[in-house]
Image 1: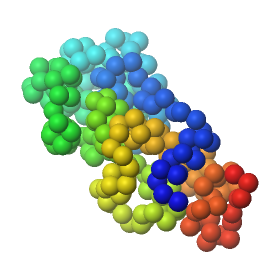
Image 2: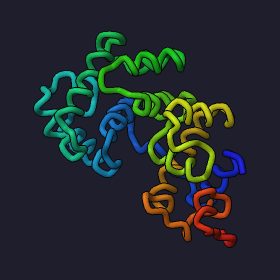
Image 3: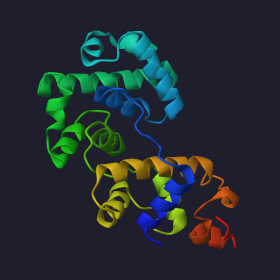
Length: 223
């Protein structure tokens, strides 16, 4: 069982995920920051607040004071911290690219990643989400769900670092943004549906090939 086999099986089970749900690349960037330590549902509520208050643009967010921004994004949690992180990104985009997201995304992939990681509050997962989902450049996003699913399958160690897991995928898959986009979204869906903290192996489409399920003497041959 290789990575493409798993991808096809997950896609057959769950169907296309249509990620990232956003109207503009700038909105994707905001969402990537707001989803840090938060569910997408709560981040989406915060984004809707920003939209309704007409703060969901570079120029409006630049003008908004931090207190107003914090209030709008309260549903996403850690709202004071995230408001500062949004302001940090706005300051960076203003200084380096005159507020033009398109100019930022004209950087090559590695250069863009280095620039984003230089912004206080943007770590590897957030930077890679921006690169993949907003810029459309092929980099594999790793999150806690990725580590959970693929350590249980026996592909990576539970102690593997973000970079080690990302390298594992990047070296074994065609470097296509569309593939990376859909794969990451399917992993998230699978982790929420079946491969939970307490796994539901009976509903798992991968259980017949899963090292963790095998350790429980569990398999499902009908999936």
